[in-house]
Figure (tube, rainbow, N blue to C red):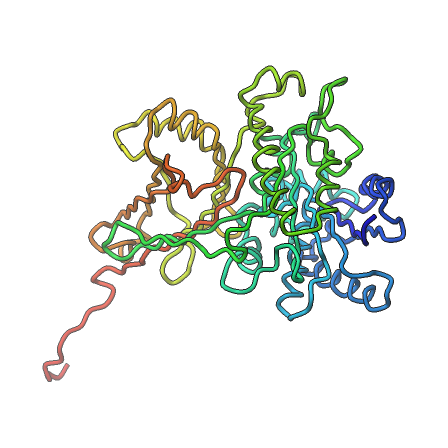
Length: 474
C-alpha cells in the first residue's frame, strides 16, 4: 500500500510504546518488512538532541546505502522525536544532501517546548523519572525542550525562518509535515498533576503546531515608537496541516486503535485513524493543501467549538472542562540590548488601546494571560501562554477593548547606564500586537510566535568625559 515508515519515540520513552501503531499500520496494508522502530537515549544527562540527530543520520545513511531501507520513506515522530527529526533534516540540508523523507507525521510534537521540561530537571522529576537511571533525566535534552529555549530559537531559524530554500512542502525533494495533537489532559494520578488547559497533559497544542511566526521589534534611542518587522517564513504563505483532536491526550494520540477519552457508546466524529492514514497516503501538493484547509477549518475548529457547546461536549466527553478546548497561543519573548545581550529585569503589561479601560486590562491579566515561564538559562527569554478564546470573547467582547498593546518597562541597570535614553531612566515602550481587524491579528490561534525586542543601551554622561589639555605641567 505504501513505502517504508520509520517511527521515532519521545523523551523518556522507547520504541516498545509504538508497537501498537506499527501493528495498526500493518493491518492497513503497510508491509511489515518496511516498518522500522527507532530507539535513542533520552534520559542520559550527556546526550543532546543534536547527538541523537547525528547518529540517526549515520545509521539511516548506512541503511540507505546497503539497500535495506529505500528512499523516499515516511517518518512518524512523537513528542521530542519532532525536534530530533527537524535537527536531522536541518543537518542534511546544511550539507547539501538530499532529504530521504517524504512525509513527516508529527504526533503531539514538542516543536516549541513543554512545561514538563523544567519539572523533569527538578529533584522531583529526577526521583520520578530517573530512579532507574542513576537519577539522570536527560538534562541537556530537557534544556532543549524547556519553554523559550535557545535551541528552539536556533532550530526555527534554520528550518522555518530566513532567506534560504525551504525544507518543507510537497514534492521537489521536500518534506511534507502533518501535525496531530490532542487537547485532553491526563485523567490518572500522578500524570494529572501536570495538566493544564489547551494541552494534552504534556505538550500544548500551540507548542505542537509547526506553523510559527516571528517578529523583531526594535527601539531607537529617544523614540518610544518601535520599528516592527515580521520574520520571512521559508515556506512563504504555505501552511502545514494541523489537527487538534479533542478526545486525545499525549499517550492516546500514538495509537489509532483507541478512542481517547470519548464516552462509552459514543461514535468518534473525528477518528484518529482517519487523519493518520490521510497524512500517510497524501500524494499531491493539491491534496496537501486540501488537507490543511480541512484539518484547520473543520477539525481544529470543531474542537474549539466544544468550549461553547455544552451539549456536544458533555455527550462526547462527559463532564469535561470547557477551558480544555479553548484556543491558545504562545509568545516567546526575548528582550535584549542593541549589543545582543539579554535584559533579565523587565516587565510586560498588557493594555487595551484605550488605556483608561482598566477593566479590560485587569481581565486580560486575570483571565487571558494564563502563564509566564522564564527560561532557566536565558532570563531575558520568557514564554507567555495566552488564552485566545478569552481574548476574543472577554477582552474584546465583554469589555469592549479595541486593540491590544503591551508596555515594556525596563529598570536601569545601575546609576550609570539605562535604556532608551539618558533622560527617562525608567524606560517604557508601548507596542501594538493585536487588533480586531483581520489584518491586525498577527497573533494566530494554536501557534507559537517568536518576538525579539531590541532596546538601546544608553550610558549616562558621566561614563566618558573629555577635557582639553592646556599645556600645564602637573
